[in-house]
Length: 428
Image (cartoon, rainbow, N blue to C red):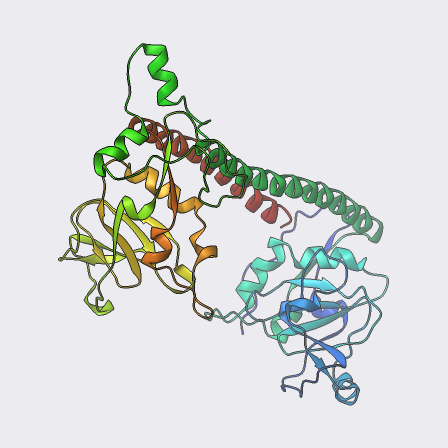
């Protein structure tokens, strides 16, 4: 174990000093090295998972374990945590520190170190903040062995340089940090609400799209431009002279919003079996997937590339079984489809592939899948889906607008995620 190479800085604020942790502590030790006998109810037994800095109390839901009162008393002979002590993670994510701010009893495992500071020298919350800072973390990583799973030994912890300011100044520092943390929490709450609004925005886009309210309808444009247009009913008549004309009121694919009670002018509704011919993909040995020419689609999207292809046109691919069932993708050109997916071997050309993708996406296939055990989607489930069908050119405009607005939402969400990450690092 080596001590840190660089000396502490000499240009400290007036009245500040550096001291080794071992010289300003009444006790530095760690939890039991022996795995205890766990019981259903008893004395809480804490590990690194329970340490959540900057919070009140401890998060027992992370790793809820208990030991008997007798075993706890035996472990207390070596390490008895008390209010005001610091618990420091010394395995894995080293340095994560929490002041004990509760009165009840518990024991700790070997992954936690316990530091008991000298009375009157520290405002203990100051020490918690210091140990969670980058200043302390950089020292700890220097003092750790450098293995893939960093471990901070007790001897190394004793050699950690602690930056000490006058006690009243410590209290002012903690008060200011608390004030800033409260502001950060409010910002984070606001960002989380904004992220929910983005999700609601996406739902609203799809709701309006399939009510005919997202873009001008083909009927509206034709009247404005003084031209005729081909309605969805006329398109359907072309593909099947025996297809009866449906009423404007019908059941529609399930969405998160109320479906329209009347179809927009020029729209019709048809079962998916009239527009698609479904078939399952074919098995391919995972070891055979390499850097070939053609993408391999399954229930989780593209999983590799082959020099063979199963279908040579863009089509709809849908996850067939398990947790991935109901996932919807668009393949592009020559593609191999694995047997954990279903694909449209034929698509009647009165429906745009992009439009079909969004129709199957809003159909909530994951929720409507069959099977009492492992969920699945089959041809029967897909064939029964009701397709809201606008004129073909209107379908393309709807898809273009959805993609435009979704790209906008993605950009906003990325900015929110970046800001959320910043709030998590601000505390350090």
